[in-house]
Image 1 (cartoon, rainbow, N blue to C red):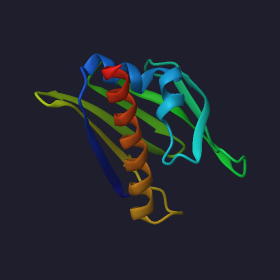
Image 2: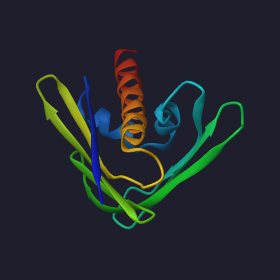
Image 3: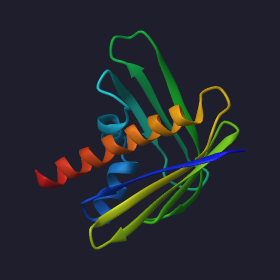
Length: 138
């Protein structure tokens, strides 16, 4: 199976970045690839074997889908691994002098072109970085 990787640099402390990535209230604020989509609900049971779920919908109500899975490995402030359907993903949090690099590597699906999948996941991650940085400046 093909894997794809997206990443962003978040200029905030690693504990703040981790919290925003793993807290349902935050996830509902950043989990969208564009302004015409949103996440009206999210749940997180952040432990190995714990479940997560988020509902992503077009703001006009024309379409939506659930993104759900199970955490398979948690290394606090460093790494999250999870399975969703028949696929898996890993999220790395790498603290450095300029901030935290958040790197997501995921198994691609076969329905949509690889470029489209990578662009969508990157857009969501960029939205995440903007959310954390705006919150940390407030």
